Length: 382
Image (cartoon, rainbow, N blue to C red; front, side, top):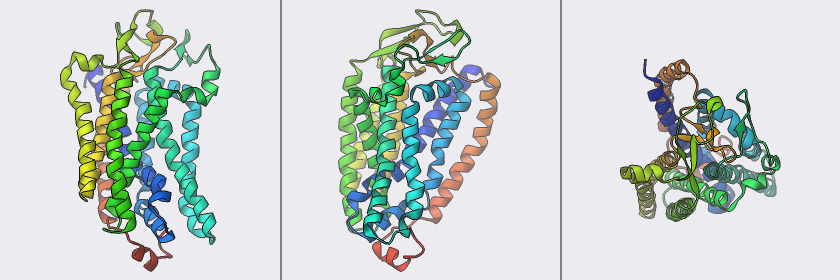
């Protein structure tokens, strides 16, 4: 049996991969829906955009469930505490996502153009809200959430209760900047996907290709701004590793920097540098019409951005701004050794199966779509 510490690190890595998978795969769905009103000017063009994601969007959404399920199983305290503090933000994401299945399935049933356009804007809402709010939430984690634990280990948000009830408190300047970065990441995925899946030289393909190059560069620019701002935000440092109920003042210091792991191990700086480089590769490839490589580069960029974020936080998962010594880390917030061990082998078996099936589905349904195809199959496609 693998040691407890090794399994804790393995599940930290797996959660990073699963959340990255959500942004990579469901990200192009969300990005495409957000861009639809801008890259498609005619009805057939809008249908082209919708049908590029039609075979995959519902399956891609499973990545969100996998990520959430992994957090619930591996880090139950993190799952419970984060859902309490970010409840309204998460409800807003789910509420926005509800528009996607309804809009996709019922759009073609409307005869009037204005009704279909209304559905298009509801799909835009279902794309832009999650991509923004996810970034805002991740940004606020770096600022710390105001939670602590009582004598029997229940997390609660004391003091300023309105902080939980008022979603506007999350929309602080740093959180909003992280939200903009997140939105740009989703838009890059969506633009690269549309450029890859639409007919070469078509209006949608040309517009998407230009936007993909632009958004890729903006990811780097805004990412640098976030990195500079983060240098002025106090980071957390683990002094003594203690279980939550045994934690005491002084176990965690808040006078550190979120760059402490990088400065202690300078080789880790290669991760954010590579993230920026891959987005620049994506921009160059999109500009030159190499859509497949552009999408691949931005996808690797997503994984590297998540790795950059996770390395900065490590070993913290959910810092507390009111009781720093009770912050949740990968050491004190994980499930039991046996649970992590069993889940590890389950993941070892089923994750490759899921990946293989996903690859097969993309292979079988691969083609570039055009307005001509939409017209010829008007009653069979969205």
